[in-house]
Length: 180
Image (cartoon, rainbow, N blue to C red; front, side, top):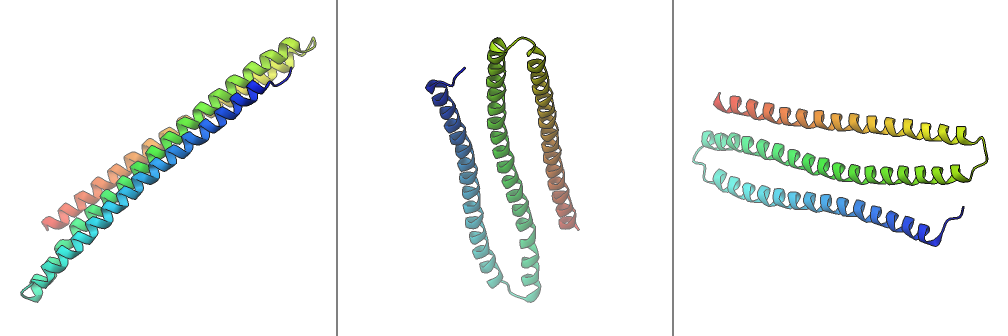
């Protein structure tokens, strides 16, 4: 049993496609973060100009302090929104990379099982037990991988729920503080 040039070419093509998929996912995440940061910088600059103008227009110290205090709440809300957006981009990128990894693992398993089937056809008598043991180990490894993937997805869902809950808690505290 020999490896043909077509098989090498197919393997190389699959590796390049995987690399390109990973690079594309990373670039998309980088682009989203860059756009998000550009928007935050622009908004912060505009807010600082507006806040400075408002402070310069204050007629007395009490109005000056009151204006400064009023600037804190929107800044906190924007910081929370920014953090949430960054987390969403990171979670999306992680999801894309996980999909690529899952496809590669599935392809590798399929190719390995195919190879085992070919080897077992040409193997000497009595080697069926060894091939069955390898297939059993592969099935156990796949089961462990599936369980690990499920646990990782559950952890991600819990983290997302915690981020959402923390965001709502901070917003609620800010509203209570603002009302007081």
